[in-house]
Every structure is written in C-alpha cells, then in structure tokens.
Length: 463
Image (cartoon, rainbow, N blue to C red; front, side):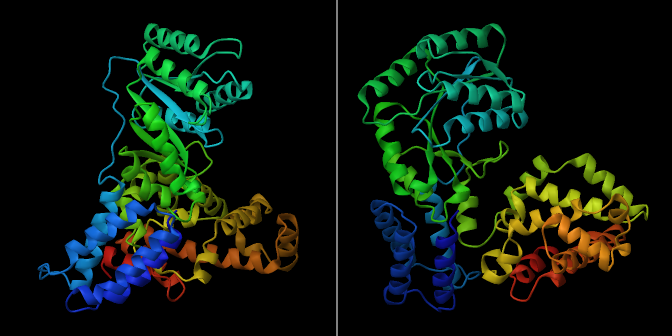
C-alpha cells in the first residue's frame, strides 16, 4: 500500500530538503506536488484541502529547531499531518465489557468480511489470549455460514452453528446466550453483506444491533475502492453507531486513498488492516508507523512485532545451536528460512518496513520479488536429501535434473547456489563474536549498488 504516494512524496520532499529557509514562495511548488500526489492516491478532496492548509500554516514563518534543517522540518510537518489525517495513534478494541464482549461485523458483500472475522478471531486468540466464539447470521448466503465454519476449524476457534431457515436475530441472541453459559471472552457476529441503499437490509442490521448491543461495531471495507470506501463507511455510520473500521486488501492497494480519507470523513478510527490473504495477515493500524512508511522511513517496530509473533522460535534456536556447534548451514535450513520469510509477508513485505528501502530502484525490487522466493523453494524441493545436505556435489547433470524438476533454468539453479553460499558465509560470521554486526555488514555488501540499504541499515548498526 502507498507505493505510488510514497514514490511521489519522496521525490517531492527531496527537492525541498536542501532549502535554507521555508517561505511561501519556495514551498508553493512543493505543496502543489504534494497535492497532486494525494489526488493520484485517490484521497478525498476535503481531506486534501485541509491537509495542504495545515502543512502551509505550520511551515511558513515558523522558527526551525537548530537540530533540523528547514527541509527536514518540512518533512516532519508532513509526517505529523499524515498521522493526524489517519488518527495519530492506534485505537484498539474495547473489550472491557462483562463477558462476552460482542463484536458485530458489517460491510458490503465481497469486502472480505467473513475472512476478517476469522483473522480477528485468530488475532484475539493468539495475541490477546481470549476465548473466542464466532457465529454467522448471513442466512441469505448459506455458503457464508459454511465458509466461516471451515475457517473456524482451520484456526481452532469455536463456531456456533446456524442455518438459512433461522432469523438473524434469533441466531445472534442464541449465540450470546451460549457464549455466556460457556464463559467465552469474545463473540464475533458475522452479518450478511449489504448496501446502505437497501432499506430493508439496513433496518434488519439496526434491529440486530439493538438486540445484542455490541461493544464494538466494525465496518469492513475494501481499500482498493479508494475514497469510495470512506463514503460507504460514512453512509453505514449514519445508520449504525460504528466504533471502527477494518481496511481489507491493503496489499493490493498501491494508492492508499481509503486509509487517508476514512478518519476525516467518518470520524471513526481504522483499527485493523488486512495485509494479505492468509489468516495471519491482519495488523493493528498504527497511523504513526504508516506515515513513516509512506515517507520511506520504514516501520521497524511493526517488523520487530511481526518477527516476535510469526517466527518459529524453537526452529530459530535449533538453527542457531546447529550453526554455533560448527555443523554448518545447509540447503534444508535455507529453505526453512525462505518459508519463514513467506509467513511474514515475503521479502518485499519485510523490506518495505526497513528504513531507506523506498529508494530502491525498480531493478532491485524485481530481484526482491516474492515470486523469486517461490522459485528458490521449488529448486530446493527438486533436490535429493543428500544434495541439500552437501550442495558441493551439485554439478552439470544434477543441475539439469534439478532445473527440469522445478520448471526453472540452469542459471536459476546457479543463482540459488550462489545466494546460498553467501548466506552460509553470513551464518558463519554470525556464530562468532560480534556476530550480528558482522552479519549486517555482509548483508550490506550483498545488496546491489543503490539499494538504499547501506544508509538505512548502516545507521542502525553503526558501521
């Protein structure tokens, strides 16, 4: 998300960063560029007008701190206003009610509502250690009930059965009763997708809301619909007392108009964003971190949290012991690392959160493409256990067999073996004294020129 906006703003703000003083004249062109960048990102016009006015008001004629150049000061103002537009801080769920805390999910059909119910249930179970029950009251689409049941089974969360012959209110009240009797902390109610112009369907969800009195009413909306997402959320908010938004499909949205418009138009916070199709792909929405990401400053906090929650700690410790004991790092271990990376949103998902990565050239981004990771995994899977253990035996005829088995070219196999050798050297350095620092220097050496990693990472690890 925000790829286009991030590129435009980075170039625009670079032009002003060398200015000695900020005046109305010299920020005029920059503000025009910022306005164009926001328009292209499909941000709502009222939001753009207010954003530009606030940036201009704060930038012109203000005393600049001695520790910042005027250009840096301007970037800081833009960052602060991006945060303000999106809500400044993450607003979590209010689950303080007497159990069960009821969460009602509303949204249009096709916005990813049922999947979001499962993602939220998994998030609350794993991160918040809550006992969660899910129920579907979508009696108009029997497949929706089955879909939620299947997802609940997949994430090992309790599912309250229902069928299309029942009334939504009857299902929901029975689920609340069941949740109370069985000491569930949270009940998530999945409703039918509906349009705000469908009066009967809107009346039904209003009655449902009154019957179960949820502590949270979340609206699920597709980020790819841009500022329309904000307008749809506003219409729903007029009919239902929404408490927050879940922005879905943000991984497919390169513009970011929805994220920057929703808070201003609805007055409601974005609480979560869906960042992929997998059930784990739900993140709390942190405006400050998102603003930092938009401006190419990275989001190290989210990356650290992701590593904590998604990396298999036992496996990582096992590998560390193996490398330290001198048993080495083989292709089986390399494949495990690729799988872990895929679970964390892939190489580009991780790179986007690192400072300085916004400056990567298109050529380098292509090399980081997650399709490359899938190809590498396929190549390793085409090897015999002996070849994975001792890659030095992989010569001509073996390379041809591995390439044919994985649907790749011999040069792809050669490239993988070269990358593996570099990783092996890095692991050796890491197992010695001062390992992490040495490893980061090796990584910088591996990055192609202009990769942006040198400046960003060097500063973090003190070259």
